[in-house]
Image (cartoon, rainbow over all chains, first blue to last red; front, side, top):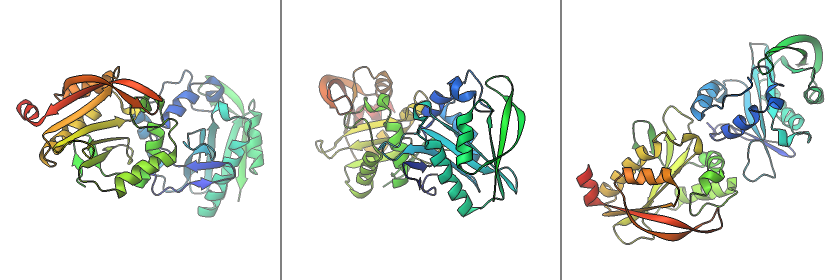
Length: 178
Length: 181
């Protein structure tokens, strides 16, 4: 797994391959409504995933033929503990999608913008997809700023199902065109 | 170094690519506090130093295996080994740890059965000693299940806790192991 996946290094961050034990942070953060309510498919309450379930769930993402899934850590943190993650992966031949979350304790430092820029740089250099789509619920302006800082442009608004809220929620749809 | 195999596990030499997994799993205080020589917090460089020693410093009286789960993540999720370098001839200490997500599934017992057999047969040991900090019932269960018997309780330093802690010392002789087979 990790031997083929080189770190992406940005000014303050290291974007590394996921490893066993990162589940600990996933289970802690995804259990928070403040996190799950901002994501489309994460339920609340969140049933903690066993390492085995997490591995099976993410198996395809760990060995993608194309795309990246990286754990975000601070360069100054010598233990390289997970503070979030993102994935940028193909939906089909032309359209890719980006998704992410950052642990609550790490909010407000611009880490996600920096990480996404690093990930997008890598994806562009390696595969240069034509379109990358991403989105955020309209009550999450912080995520909108992350996307705008990375050059994403708002295309339209929809209503999308939120698993945590169990209702449809207004949603901004963004895209980044090559 | 030999590669050992059990139903669910591969016990193999460490690789440098195991470093982040080792750092993340052992960097959990609930794991680190049960071990004697593990600092806390545990940096990636600590893991790299540990792995480098296992890989570069060949010592015939020490055999430390990475625990990898078949059909699981293709990295080490624990370690198990026997250290004889500071023990009398024919004797070695069994040590092990596995990441918290893998506790309670019998993985270490499964690995330890294989390593104990390796130590008594391939390494030709006549005595294996092992210790667990008092209160670590998971580790105690593993050792008793292998046939280890209590010797005494003595203080042992825990680097992670930064203090001396009561440690239960146990022993398994080759004759007892052979009779129990």
